[in-house]
Image (cartoon, rainbow, N blue to C red; front, side, top):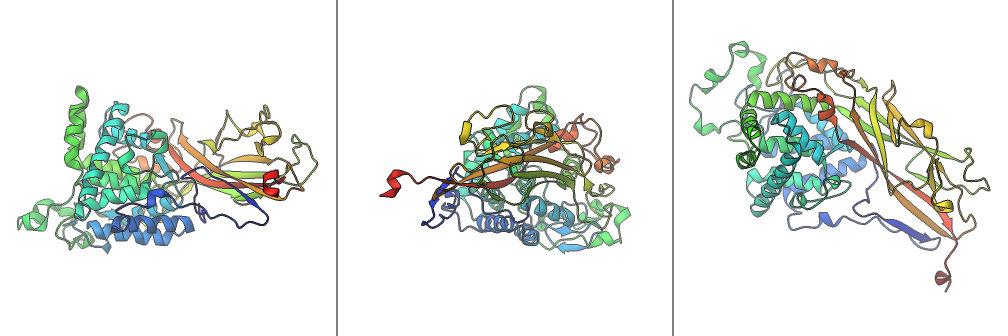
Length: 486
């Protein structure tokens, strides 16, 4: 959501001002005031959040490069050109492809997030290959709390940068939280953005390369395949002695041991299969190219009209929010030539049809076409029930769009001297419900894809719980109260 305005939803606010009073400033989240706020991880989270507020993709891309530099994670193009040297020894080690960095930056700026329970469901089903989703969700949130508390106790240890950055990003969510609260807050209040998701994978599931000093002299010969010898992939070699991710992985065996029966054995085997884990992560990162954006028309603000029209008059001004679902990746190569994604095809860009979009407003829209239950107090109503397939759900069209229309009610006191504003949080959640592979993503399901063939409903699992946010301020006049006249 380019140009997304500074967010105020850490607490639901309603501002009331008279025509003689200054406009109050949006409150600052108390989650940003804490003992580690000056730590580099939290300063980096602040930079990313500022880029999101201004819609600045380039600043977000640069901030993610700084993150990679800090944890010694190399960055390369699909053709093997080095953007940043990390701790990788050759093309068989994990590194970040540059197009993936740009995907994560754009997704973060667009405020695309996933509910934490849905995110943990993705890990349980795709990574661990187990069906005990609810039990894993509870156990993994406990592990995340422990990882954060351990990191906060030793914030200067390089391996603790990742969990502190995950926490820093959590404090900038639409509804902010700290990782220390994951077991005490409702999961409906916990969103995971795609940068956080990637960092969680890095900290717990992605193998880091061995340090320099423990390498045998013939290490490169034994791990490099003949196909790459003397090729352009030789440029994939890092300069750092060791990496600073995967530090959370020692917490996984105790978690897996608490899973019931066969699930523990299945999960342990799955976590140990690094090739499968990397293949699944590759698919997931590509799917992060799915962008769900809410576009307001005509803007983020509207004033109730001064008119004598009845509230049921459909000629009253309307206001539209359009959810746009697209697949967008900035890339020149179609297939990776080097590294852990060799052979994996990249889907073409384009709109996504038949994504089910569910709209939520906070506070809820209290009036609708069925009954104006709040009488004259409702300031905004849904305009047309025919826009929906059921309740607040609709499907995107051929252009990837689904539009909801609001109707502005007449201003209750056109001659009033008190100006009142109500702030709405607007959320659209999207998911695939079709068994068909959605275009233009069909190219992802090639022979190199690990995740696609793993289970029915892969796209629903991988995209379930995806949300986008926007905001709306509705303003109108009220009569000045007697207490304000003296």
